[in-house]
Length: 363
Image (cartoon, rainbow, N blue to C red; front, side, top):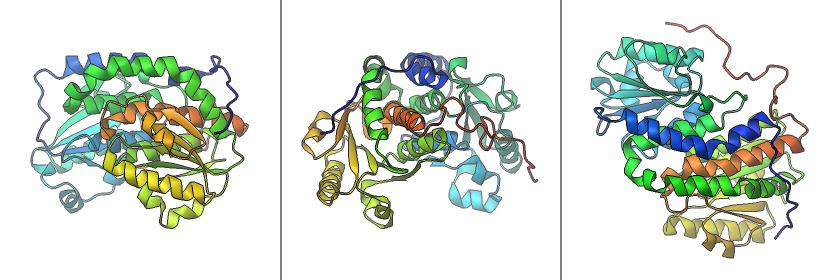
């Protein structure tokens, strides 16, 4: 097992502060959802979850915990015809609900998609979950709004607290009774361990590699968001692949080298764990990859280079995403520093901006 050089968690960075404050904001989000839910009914309605970029990945994560829901990025919905929508989301046009997820709510597609769906499908209801109560999305007529704490509206370019809180809010709508009893313990767990997790993240990020892999079974929203965070925060210097353990056995395995960091978000499901363990043992024996295992204590018996205890081991996989993402955010932060990039300003040339620049929306 690799030796770790512990470094205290940074306190002079905006992004580091936004990552560390998440446990406190999760409790606030719980209170806001509890106040929002009475009198509203979402169960058994065909739901489409939408957003752009990280917000789209939040939609993927929520859809995994919302029976019958479809996750479709706004960047797709802006292009879909009525027929394509009816094929992709059967029953949606006849009384479904569009759930728009947004940090600022000021991106061109955030407003454009809602207006387009309102015109195409008048029977569809609209809910916006947003970190900005003053954004354009939150002010649209005909849209019910669940506004989260202003502190979730990350000022950094990369979404961190906004991702976890948007995801948590969406999950709580139908899964409140499964999550709420455990949330205080999860929040304490993350708050107490953030510095230790950062120490491991530094060690993993120190691998001399311009590529990395994120693996998760049945937690696609977690894997793709984890890969995006490091891509964003290193200004594209480190490229990641998000896959399932079984999926990587195919063509994507070409990405693995001896020093490639592999973040393995292992399952709480015994059946899935058997396949995940087989994968880790095989590729470790082949000398491909440096493995960081994130999961229950039992996976420490597998070959690995680093181990990070799960922060939400009591929850089923599909509800762990808002909490387990913290280690991936810390890895992205450490990778940014290792790449010589300022995590608070990873795109100084403006190639990527906090809010997508306006562009023409065609009717």
